[in-house]
Length: 139
Image 1 (cartoon, rainbow, N blue to C red):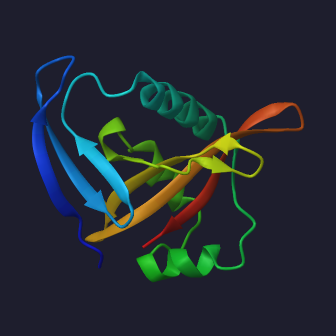
Image 2: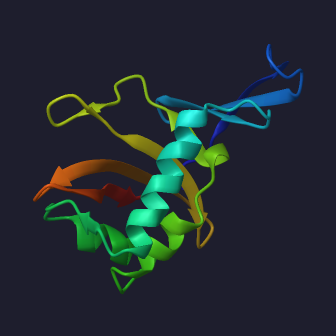
């Protein structure tokens, strides 16, 4: 299991609430503060709406199902339950957010069965409709 490393605690410049900064792999993550980027809330709101309307898919990766089994997820539909419970505080700052032609992907870390799980999501246009695509879901 990969543990996060504590970096610092600071006051937010906008709201003066304490913010804890952590490092997970090559990413920085932030918890706390009431002025987290609104874009994350907007993205999650739209993503959750797409999930509930079954406008969702997973990346066509050979190891996707195998990675789910390693986490203990045996039904692919279970990932959508976990994604529905994501919050803005679980987002990682990705210094290389472009994916597949420059479209931005959002990365989150969520504890599932005691493990830190890396979740990468983006919204794409497929057949003239927005679709939430789960690009990664693994340890």
